[in-house]
Image (cartoon, rainbow, N blue to C red; front, side):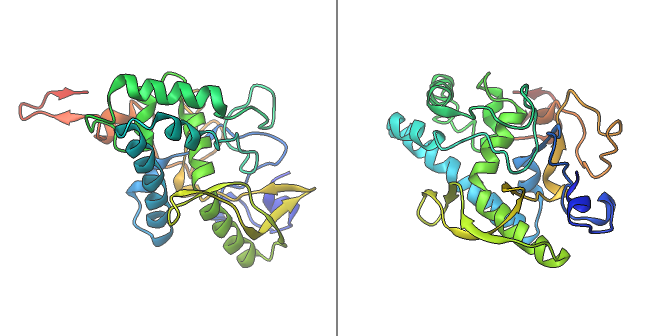
Length: 247
C-alpha cells in the first residue's frame, strides 16, 4: 500500500511533496546528489553541504595516504530499506550495501584513477565514472546513508503536516558534518508494521535509466536520461574554446 493509502491522507501523488511509495515494493527511482546541489531552498542547501562535507573528508584521507580511514568511512553504507527506492534483485531492499569488501574496492579504484589527487573528482556523484561497481542505485544508497538525518527531519515535518503518527527510536547511522564522523541519535521516526520509513522529496529523485518515467506515471521526475556528465557540464567535463568537449 502507498503512504497516502496507509494513513488515509485522501490525496494523490501530485498533491504530495514526497514520493508516495508503496511499502511492498521497490521503486526504480534514485536520490540524485546532483539535483540536490542545483537547488537553492534551505533544506537542499544544508543537505548538499553535508554530502560535500562527507566527500571532502574522504578526499582528505586519500590525499594524506590514510586509505584505511577512507575505507572505514564507506563501511557505514548499508543498503537502506527505509525509502523503498532503488532496485533489488531479491525484492524489497535487503542487500549488503557497500560493506567492507566493496568499500575497499571503491577506494582502490578512486586512488588508482588519481581523480581526487588531480582535482577532477570533487563531488560524490563523480565517482560513478571511475568506479565500475558504483551505479546510480548504489550512489543513491550512499547518499541516503549520508543524509539520513536530513531525511528524518523532512519526514517529521511532512508527518506533522499530514497528521501521520511518529514515535521515538534510535536512528541508523548518518553523517554528522559538525563532528565529521558517523553518528546516531534518538529521534521521532515514522513506522509502519514495525518498519521504519523515510519520506523523500520528489524534487531530489531521478529515474533509473532502465525504466521510463512516463511508463510509471512519474511526472514529478524532473531530469532527463543521461549521459549526465555531458548534459550537466559536471566537474568531469571541460568545455574548450573551440566548442569541443573532453572528459
